[in-house]
Length: 113
Length: 112
Image (tube, rainbow over all chains, first blue to last red; front, top):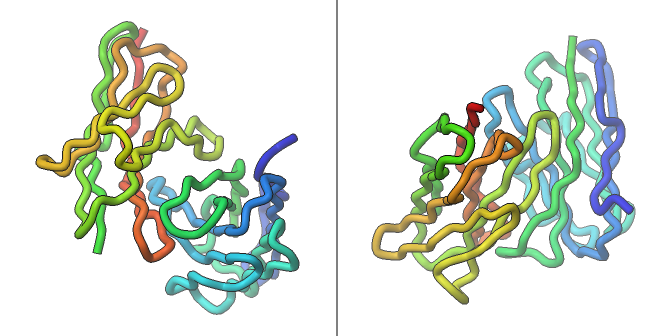
């Protein structure tokens, strides 16, 4: 009964490839997020969706495209992967937007060779 | 704009001694403040949250934090460190713009 789950847990791929990371939450939350954690552990928000509507879109290369088929799912597709995309990507969800507590998934460790 | 500063990038304590992880925030209003913990190769887990109901907030695993508006601080403490407390700790501020602002993290090392 995992609250926020992500697949895959590990992803090793070559430069130039296209890959997707999937996220699902079973908490009944309205809002979902994608974060990138770099090698220095710094966490930065990338996107947020509220009820399938994009509400946060930080300065992220347009090679990154989020998709929310329903409010329980938020997937992240990355085109033309680059070495600098190597990081840990975390999905999170919250009941609503604003100052709500966010619940994080276990992370997807992406390594681009 | 809001910001969060974790004053120590690394704190090392002995098992059984107190833990103090320091956090200062900057905000034009009273934000929500959180502490999250990240164990190695794991996701982030909420330790505690401040929402203006009480200045002393108790969290899981014996941690607590005190909100001090005059000092713009939200330091995390625990009376007695356990080996299992070794992890990265993040102080986080919630803003009105739907975003959480994360500090850069404090790595807590617990020595036997």
